[in-house]
Length: 253
Length: 249
Image 1 (cartoon, rainbow over the protein chains, first blue to last red):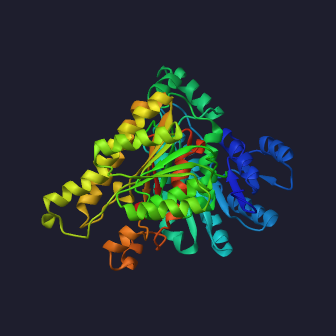
Image 2: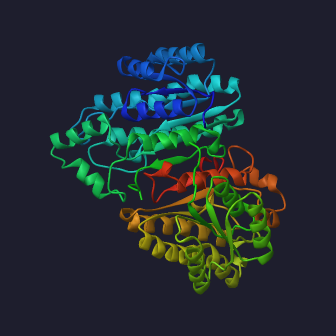
Image 3: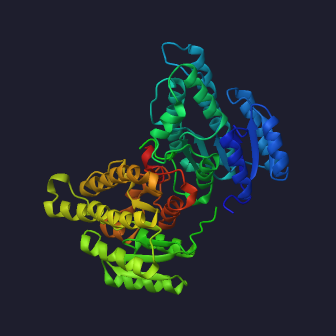
């Protein structure tokens, strides 16, 4: 088991990728704190996995005090943090830059960038005191590519790569590794929402466009992203830090 | 996530020592049947013996990756012995002592490109021809952190590794719909016999990495196994860094 006795804190644990990751982490022997906006989905998963393996906490990652509270809850329940998966994210409104409102940018940056920054801010001291750990931030294919109608989302996913590189350099001395995981299009609620958004603004059949541009010719499955997360969270990636890990079926190629 | 390669046929080129040998060992421990190549008979014999001592099924082939006749013969021998080729790790490579660009001899450029780039090219062609016949396969090419970063005074090496990355990505797209996944691994500095023979002060190399140490061959092998396994089923044309944070600097 690759994560035996490790404590994993994961935000956005109720989402498609989040849930798949939680299952894999537990299967690999970890204790997992599931954090999400509400506790409906995460509590269900906790009940299924068993409270000896998991717990959940509600958090709006864009709020300073709530992120602090989330980290404290994890330490109180499980004793520390070995792996942090900053996975909470929103897609925002689909539409081009001139037609959308700046409030969309603010919302997307608040969750996708500020939320990640706050997570790093509160988790790093805990990991440092615990002797080290692994942090991964969910970026995206959108973090290394452009696409019309998703500028705020892409900007936020590019931004966390910059954040990751700086964090990696700062915390290497504490035995903490920091990387991003960059999923392509994955079969989740978020992708359905993006597809619908594209249809609404008349920007075409998003799924068909993505599949045509993806060498593997399909969306990814949440557990395929989770596999990379287990790799990065485990000692198998002991020499991996400061890097961008694509799981996108070759789309960015 | 235990790596399980039970009964898979895995080729690792340049596996007499260093990263190649570490990969061979790792795959063997995970249950694979191994074919290894090297340009040195001595290194090859020693590696084969060591692997067999751990109970692995090993075929050793003396091979120059830069020679197409040799490479084709290599594939024939593997298929004859094992019946197929599931996974290929194109690791055979070389490097040069540090030297300013304007001093590098043309012959040296040709030698490095001949192994590091053309060797990968020729091996991939032979491997893919076989994989097309059998309906699929996995290829992992040994690129480098220098595929995306600079290393002054190592221009032939850096050029070749940058090229391997491009080759990997473009060819991956061509075969993506035929169940052949092709990725590259990008190691940082590791204290292999090759590196030790070329660099006097390894501590200088360590400063390139955020982690401030060299990697181990086992760390690189872990990344190779991840790319060769079904755990990376949604990855093709990707470059997997195992570089201790070199590319964040």
